[in-house]
Picture: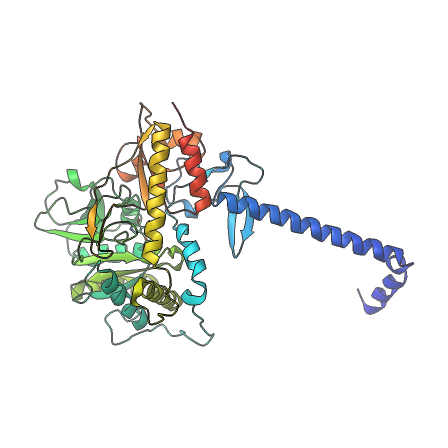
Length: 458
Ligand code: PMP
C-alpha cells in the first residue's frame, strides 16, 4: 500500500470516528492474551510429559530402532526454552517414550551450572580445517585433548598417557573408524565383527549398512566359531544389561575394541584404570551432551590411530572444532566439580555425585515399581569398591534390562499396549521377553513411567 493509500485508509473506514480504532485495539489485546494462554498451557503439558506422543501416532514396531531419520510421530510440537518437544496435548495418559537412550536427565545439572559450561566463539574464530598439524590426529583441538587426559586422571577410569587420542563425531564415527583401521585391507574376505549378546543394538546395522568388503557383522561372540581374524566389541558396562564385561572369545587373531561409553562413576564403580589397546568414550553418556556429537578414542598403536584418523579425514574431513571446544569446556567443568577447582570460594556441585544420586534414586524407585507390579524382573548387581569415590557402591546402569514374566512373550508389544515405548530384546540378539528401557530421561517422564509400570498388574 502506498503512502497515499495508507493515509486514505486512516482517514476513511478504519480511521473514521475513533470507535473502530478502540475496537481494533481491544480485539488485538484479546487475541494476544488468548495466544499467550494457549502457549502457556502447552508448555505446562509439555514439561509434565517430556518427549511423548499420543498413542497411535507413535513409530510402528517394524521401524528401525534407530528411528531418528524416520518420520517423527505425529504430535503437537511445543516450544520449551530453545527446544521443541512432542507433546500429547489433551491426552490424559500420554505415550512414554523410553526407547532411545537420550541423556536429558543431566540437563538440570547443567542448568544449575549457569555459565560455568558456556563458551563464546566469535565469527572469525575456528575457521580453518586444521587444529594441530603437528599431531597425528591433525583435526584434534589441543585444549580438548588436554581436558580428556585431565578428566581420565581425575576419575581414574582409564590410562591415557600411552595412548593417542582420536576425536570423532560421536563414538559412532569412531567405531566405524576402528573397524576400518583394524581390518586388513588385503584379506580374502571381510573380517568378522562380533559382540556377546545381548549387544548394543546399533552394532549390526552400523557394521553392515555400507556392505563393506573390509568387515562384516558375524553376530553373537558366544557362538562364534569361524576360524581366522575377527574383531570383538567389548562394551563395559554393557548396553543393554549394565553388566561389567570382558572379552569372551580370547583366540589368537582376535582384536578387541573396548566401548567404555558407560565406564563413569554415576553408572558403575570404577574398579581399575582401563588400559586396553583401543578404548571408545563419548560425551553423550559421560556428561549428557549427546547433541554435541563428540567422542574420543584412546589408541595405543600409532598405525591404528593413523588409519582411524584417515577414515575420519575421508568421511568428514575432521570433526567440528566448535563442538570440540564446547566439549573441552564441559569436561573442564566436570573435572573442576570433582574438587579440583581453583575456585574454592564457589565450589560447584560434583557432577558425578549428582549423577550417582539421581541414578541411585531412580533404580530404587524402579525396583519398588517392579515389586508392586509383580509382572517383571530386573538384573541384580553386586557391589564393588569404587576407587573414585572411595566407597563400596552398587552399579546403576543407564538402561534397565527388564524381563516380562508370567508367560508374556513379546514384552515390547505388551508395554506398548500400556503406552510405554521400549526396545525389544530382539534388537540386542536375544529373545523378545526382554526390553531395554532408558533410565536417563527427564524426571517428569521417568516419574510418569514409574507410575504407569507399578499400575500394571496380572
Ligand atoms: N556405544 C554405546 C555402547 C552406546 O550406548 C552409544 C550410545 N547409545 C554409543 C556407543 C554411541 O555414542 P555417540 O552418541 O557418541 O555416537
